Amino acid sequence: MAGLDKHIFNKIQITPVETYFGSPGKGRIVGRNSKSENYGINQREWLLQITTDSGLVGLSNARPALNKIPLSVLYDDLKGLIGQELSGFFAVSGGRVTNINPRWSDLIDRYGFLDVALFDLIGQALGQPAYSLLGSKVRDTVEGYDSSLYFQDLVNPAEGAYAVAIEAAGAVDKGWRALKLKLGRPGKWFEPYAGTRRDIEIVETVREAVGPDIKILVDANNGYDGRPDLLEDFVRGISELDVFWMEEMVTEEIAGYQKLKEWRDRYTPKTLIVDGEGDKGRDTIYWHLIELGLLDAIQPDMLHMGFWYFHVLNRDIEDSGYDTLIAPHNYNAAYLGLRADIQFGAVTERFVLAEDSTLNFELYRGPEYRFEDGRYAVPSSPGLAVTIDQELYDRVYRQHETVIS
Image (cartoon, rainbow, N blue to C red; front, side):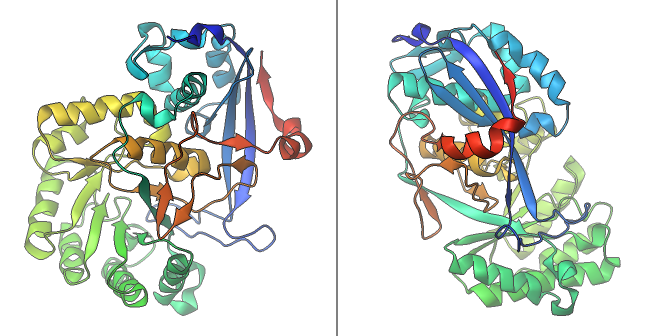
């Protein structure tokens, strides 16, 4: 344990922190997806800080919980952490986390984001990066993709498909080399055949705008449910456009994915089929899809899973001999989820890409995560390698915090 018992939790702070797509005062509107209204101009994280009596502070984002439950419920669930020793949550040997304490396994399974703050603290206490608690580094940089390209053609309807292409080209100018396009227009907002045609047109127009070397990913948010005829038309329509992956084209079920794989193999065989944002391990439909060879990459949410349970899933896939890759979902996790994603990607061979909602919160400081040519550098500093601007926090955010002590 190397002195982890010397660090005792004495305070937890939960604080809403907001930023904007674009810049404050002239924020960029991120549009609809196949099921929901415009995502909007701003984004909120719920900054979680766990402080020890030794002065360490572990960071995470509690938004995955607070999207679903009141803050009062989370408060009650976390207040039992006060007075606990850092050594009590995970077994650590030789600088590696080797197991989870059964006493806390249910809580950490329920609140995966809690695990990120704990790994941050353990890494700081041991003087090593968070990723190194799971194994040896396999890459020095992690590629990210811009996932903020929604139905911009409905935000700026006069521009049609070019509205998405304009923003895609802008993302490339800012450095991203992989872009995810929200599709699924037949699901709600368009007449079905017109929606399918527009989806294809979006991919065509973006490909023309960004050139052949940029990865294009598409995500339909299950917008082709109940319309296999239209889904086949779409897959056929992108056959010459070098799409890197197709995500959530239909709600996950075996028969639908068998047809999707058949069409993928026929029309665009190099395109990955990905799904699984809601995954929590082996007892899920996603594991059955893996067993049947119908899922090329799985996407549990980074802060829904946390480092440890993600590591267990990765180990289970490897032990079972499957080729399935891992591409963590991160949209609602924004800044801190992305940094956790990068740490996990540093140590995971089958990691594909890190989802980047492109938001930059002024409160956070993580200078070692340098972004260049579409890739983030992996930090060498202990823990998560993120701090907060304390002066800004005290001036702007402290008045909104909830404290558990």
